[in-house]
Amino acid sequence: MHPLRHPLRLAPPAILASMLLPIAAHAATPACPAATRPAYAMTFAPARPTPVHGPSDTQTLLDLYGVGHGVMQLFGHAASWASVRWIRLHAERGNPAAQHLLGVMHVQGRGVKQDDARAVQWFDRAALQDDVDAENDLGVMYAQGRGVPQSYGRAEGWFAAAARAFAPAQFNLGVTFEFGRGVPADPARALSWYLRAAGQGFVPAQRALGVLYGGGHGIARNAVAAYTWDALAKAASRPQGAGALCTGQAMAALGATMSPLQLATAQRAAEAWWRAHHPTRLY
Image (cartoon, rainbow, N blue to C red):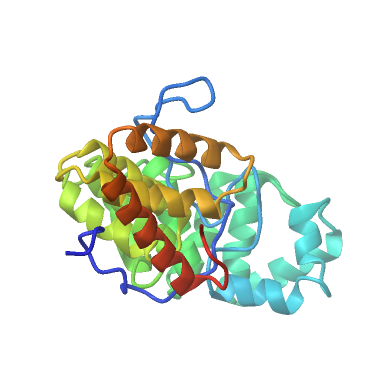
């Protein structure tokens, strides 16, 4: 049996993103505080806005108009009046990518007044046109009760709508089922959703798998699988970032309990996955 116990050919590779909110760390240390309530993944994190994860209408909008119309300037530096006017114009004309982008602007208070309720309105308009970024972010707003009455049920519905091929929403469904937020806790279903997102190279899901397999939280503990996914998450994280540090600590703790054969098996599995998705070697 494959050391990961599940097939990895679950979805095509996607662009790795580093803009998402952190999830639970393995160890309770000053650098890696134990977290019992992992954060949902938004398409844009309030603290570090960057292009979205994977191909989407919003990504296309940024690619086509980011330089000429100042959209990237809007998110990287100070907002320009022309950028805001241009985005609002297209949003009001019904462009779902612009509607999602305007919602993000209201969440962050960039170029417009910070207003969660207005953000929800724009996310809702884009989500009704099947924009996966907006569907996912609308789910987060409902889960956190931002701009709308808190509702895990509605959050789960929007995550499910976006999860057809969108790794952040798949990860959010994993969080929903792992912790029973509005649904009965179901570690097996959480594992399935984490695997789908992790199979696309989505780092928060890879870290979540390391936690789930390493601790055996409602599933059979599998140190080899935990180490494998941790190795992949660490490789894709910023070398000096907190995510890489915490994952490295988890790998050290796991490695101390594993036999040389188990370590070699995990490293081979991680190397095989990495080389299937990247032009370089992992080890």
